[in-house]
Length: 140
Image (cartoon, rainbow, N blue to C red; front, top):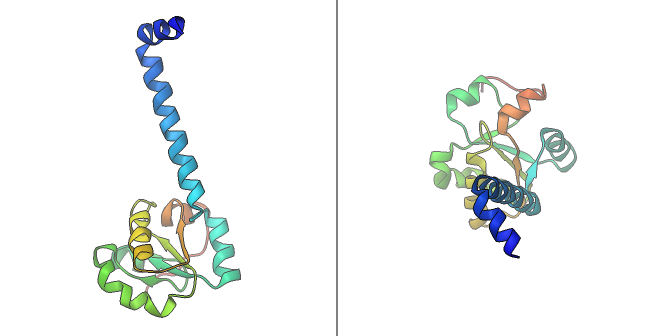
C-alpha cells in the first residue's frame, strides 16, 4: 500500500490521466446503459421497422437545407410549445436529433418528463447521418 501512495505522489499526471479515462469510460457505459442512443444505421431500422417519427430540433434554415425524410420540426428553444405538435405521436417511437447530438439529450429528458415513453436519440445527430451518406429531404 505504501508503494501505491508513493507512486501516486511521484506521478500526479499519470494518476490524473487515469482518473480522466476512468470517468470517460464510466460516462460512456452509463450513456449506453440508458439504451436510447442509436447509430444512424440502427436509426434507419427503427424508422423502417417500427414506424418511428423523426423529430428535428434544429432551426428552420438548417431543417430546410436537409432533414431526415418525414421529420417533424420542433425547434429546441420552443420545445415546450412544440410538444403539442408531438402529442399525436405519443404512442409511436420518436427519433430525436439535432446537428451533432448535444441538444437532443436535453430534449429527450424534457420529453421523458412530459410522459413520452418511446424516445431514441440519433447519436452524432444529423452530422453522423450525413457522414453515413443516408438520404436527406430538402425544403418543406
